[in-house]
Length: 418
Image (cartoon, rainbow, N blue to C red; front, top):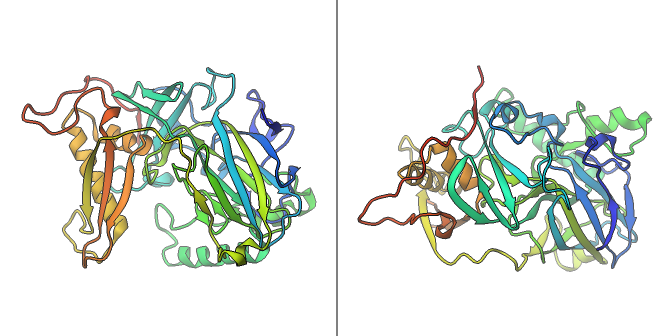
């Protein structure tokens, strides 16, 4: 096993650990540990809400989830010799749930969760159709996941980090804050908001000196969106065997990682759409000096996907085009087309007895494939959702006998705002 350089004690909160990570991006957050090019090492990760979501049959914790606390990131890890302009090579050697802890109150101790976030607390990809909070608990058995809240389904997870990236420079951080503030200003009262500005409340900044804490907290960027440094990309195929090339913007690179997922469908469409968990990740790092200029990587990571995806061979695919539910034509709106494809898949699954919310949760958690299938045929983009048929305990394909019926009476926990 590689050396463990960031341990977590499951009996303690993220902020009470021997080594404290962070939940904001800022170039002045000091490395919590240093590694050398060529090193392999292990890192423990807490699930993104640090234990605020529980293994129960209520969705009130999803409804009231404390968004100002996320993400609980492990790091930053400084890489000796890394300088701005380099490319940081990160190999994902292994990852999984919390080691040797197959039961307990923390996600990753033999279980994980998927949530539909309510519109008033973040929303999701289909928040206009699903404005309330719902939750599904998933139990792990090896690589397989099942849920008491979504019957007759079992699938192999593609375990991956939802979030990994390098620290921004002060200049890059300033660009982020300026452009996101400008976007917010176009509709400052929107629910959910157009972007999340710096928020000092609940900021965790590692070992930033107390004398500088308030200033850094007021500048530091939230970790919710992906940006030029990588970050919260939620790419389900970034799994074991993947190699990622990250731009380096500060001395040491300052790599951070977290938000581990047991499984996820393309798009993580419910916002908390993956199966969230804590766990471990083994990484190997190296450098390409001046790699950003050499390979034309001025921003955003490039990567080689892992080779351990589940071997599903048969799919049922749903398509959508860029026309709203009200019949309004949009011009090559690929996001809308993907929403319509997802809604068509949800409508189809309800014919077997699933509630729309169960179907939505399933599309967020299971290893569905999402694709932009046509982006040039004006005025309609076409997007598609591929659903692996083998994840169901019954034949999900259309046939002359009509749809089978899943066991009735099983529901996904629901909590609405009052």
